[in-house]
Each structure stands twice: as structure tokens, then as C-alpha cells.
Image (cartoon, rainbow, N blue to C red; front, top):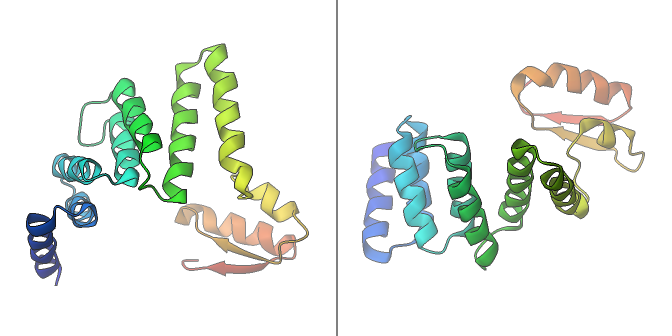
Length: 171
């Protein structure tokens, strides 16, 4: 029962001020379309030293989701995420990508060079930001398609044509 889960997270938050409880409450509000309350809970999670919550807040500020759109505030949250030790590798990579998007959006030549550097750094761990690179890599036998649903059919056909085994949760 979702209401019981919400009550449980509320109790945990009140007793411990745990960032994970705040994140769960933020997600609960986000899933119900109450973005303003979601942002408020992400702020509490970030204040509880949750680095990934800083990245989520940066997205909210950059795109104006549940708050006023502000590139400056987005960059400030990304700086805070960089300074925290409590950030997952995924959160760190997402912060690099978002910082690159912000720089590209600013459309200045110096920002473009910095953005490309950030994108190369984010991709240095061997992941593939583009499907073509995965499909062309002969050392990869299996692909998992986790893209938006409307792209699944095209990606499945391209992966099959490249001789890959395919895992896709929603065809």
C-alpha cells in the first residue's frame, strides 16, 4: 500500500533525517505530479548530504520542474554534488552530462570546448551514449534496450541486423 509506505518514510525522516527517506518521499510526490513538494523533499535529501539529490535538484532547476528555471542554481547544485563524498558513480556521471548540456546550451565557443571535454570524461568508463557505437562493437554479444518505448522497435531491428542478442522489457 503506497499510503503505508509514505507514512513509513515520514516516520523514518522525522526520526533520522535520513536522505534516503527524503528521496523516497520526493519520488512519491513526483509520481503524483506534485513537483513543488518533490523539489522540497529533494532539497531535504541534498541537505542530508545525498549527492545524487543535488544532481536531481540541478535537473529541476535547469528544466524548471517544480521550481523556477535557473541555470545558475543548476550549476550551483552540480558544484555541491561534486564536493560531496555521498554520490553514486551514476550520479557523478549524470552530473557530468548535465553540466555539458548546460554549457552547450549557453552556446559560447569556450563553453562548447568545455562541454565536449565533460562528455568525453563522462564516457570514459566505457559506456555508450549512442546506439551505433554499441552495435558496431564486435566484442558485445548482448544488448539491453532501455530507451523510451517509442524507440524500441527501431533499436530491436538494428540490433538484430547487427547480430546481437536482445533484452527488452517492453517491446
